[in-house]
Length: 170
View 1: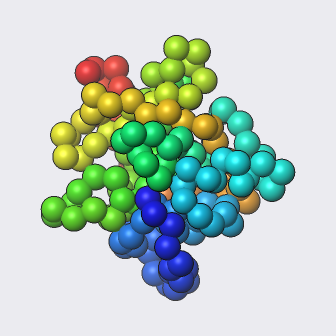
View 2 (view 1 turned 90 degrees about the vertical axis):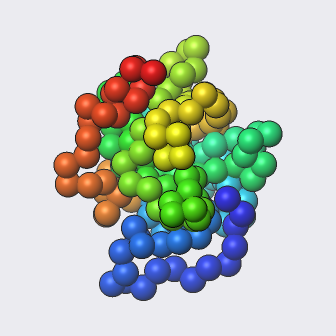
View 3 (view 1 turned 45 degrees about the vertical axis):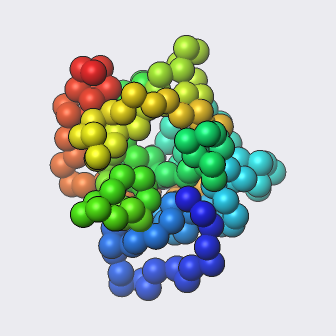
């Protein structure tokens, strides 16, 4: 979640093979050219990119800084499942083979905000094999030049049913 100066992936490389922080991944996957810690993206986007509270494929989800996310977090919307459930693709969330930094594709994001405005969410967490008990504050969505584009963000056949079970079944 720390922003590091990392060169973009070579054009032939898969964005899914990236290992590192969430910021360079989100920048590459979304085309939103913002630098710095994830928690600064929302304010940096003001006047540069449209922002809002409605998810769109390819948009960046900007998580607020919190006790659990000291540097915030950014992820990219890969699929919209229904009004309060979507899938995102992001880096450096769950551990894979004991390591952080890997990309996770089509992860469930569930809107648990009282106003149904995506201001508070739960995220699927590989380590617990489901939505964790933690909720995270979200600024909103940053709509970049690749909004609507899913270049490797989503699998050919994502598991919508599992996503809904993750959200409503727990």
